[in-house]
Amino acid sequence: MDKRERAERAKQEDAILNRVLIWIAGSVVLEALLLLLDRYYVNTRVSELAIKQGLYQMFGVLAIVLPIAFLACAAWWVLTWRKGEHRLLPQILTTVLLILSVCAVVARLYPNKTGISALYVGVPCLAVLALVYYLYQHEFFLVTLLGVMSGLGLWLLDRRVGHEIVVYAYLVVEVLILAAVVVFTRKLQASGGLLSVKGKLVRVFSKNSNYTMLYVSCAVALLVQAAALALGAMMVLYGVVIVWLLAMAVYYTVRLM
Image 1: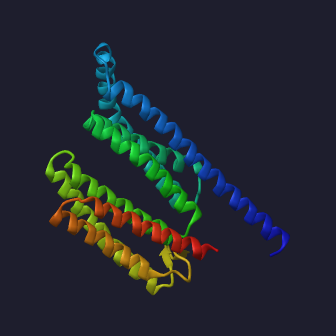
Image 2 (image 1 turned 90 degrees about the vertical axis):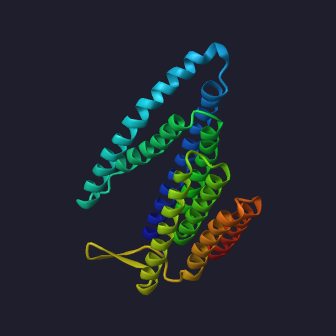
Image 3 (image 1 turned 45 degrees about the vertical axis):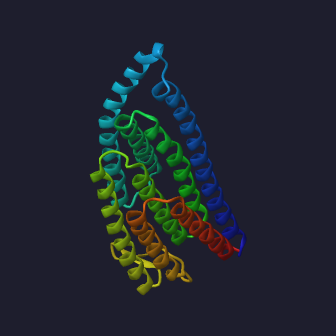
């Protein structure tokens, strides 16, 4: 590796580090805001009911405005990407608005401990997903994403959040996503980890990717949800998801060395 290649690699590593730090800082700030929200929106004193009502009305507006703004920024991002421009601003705005939209909708629909508790867990999980995406192989990011989806499915079944039709609708969507992941993985396996985008080959997975782990991860996610439907969302099922993710973390960390 010559001097120019080392400089380019150092530049890329610095960019990745900066993005990781931004995600960490953003998650810390959002968790701090959730603490204030828990204090004045959930655990409200009698003398502070006016504050809670004001926040409830505010989230009613934000739950509409923020998703619309997210869709607009997402369209902007897609347009710039199609033009071959890799602007950072639309990516940042789209990501930030998506996170804020989810928080606003959850806070509006579940103005109680359940909604805020979900956000408490969701924000760190999102930060972990970002760390995995930037620091590990893309296949491990996909495995981690499947694990998070399984955990969310177990939580919904356990708490029966909202109407039961919402829970079962999520499980149906999850099964469809698992099927799509299997098809997508099979396609990448046949092409050696390459994906054709506008006639150009883009490397999604590395050449030495172990596709068996992806198929097994899909199977684990499906079996966990099936067991939860048949037996109930027991703690042992949460343990299965966590143990599998830890095993995958060790596996992919070793492969980085």
